[in-house]
Image 1 (cartoon, rainbow, N blue to C red):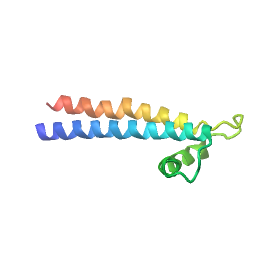
Image 2 (cartoon, rainbow, N blue to C red; image 1 turned 180 degrees about the horizontal axis):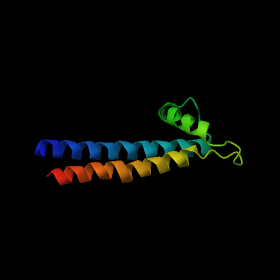
Image 3 (cartoon, rainbow, N blue to C red; image 1 turned 30 degrees about the vertical axis):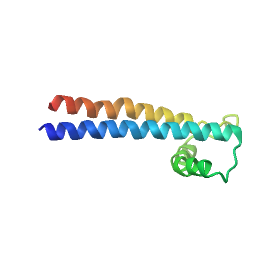
Length: 99
């Protein structure tokens, strides 16, 4: 049973790390949009490519007429925080309960 326990704990930690990394990518993308960085820069293109698919889905649901501000990064960060607080912690508790 300890194998399943360790596996669930590893999945929880990996998911937590990946979600944190993605949250920092979203923050970087937002900062770059404020600065107006070169869109041909490889780092800028990478950040846009990994964040735009999720952000565009959120933009379809959010009303755009909120003063011209794009709130999709903030909404996505809140979703990530919720997933980290709920799913990751639940996985960790299940793993601890098995041990």
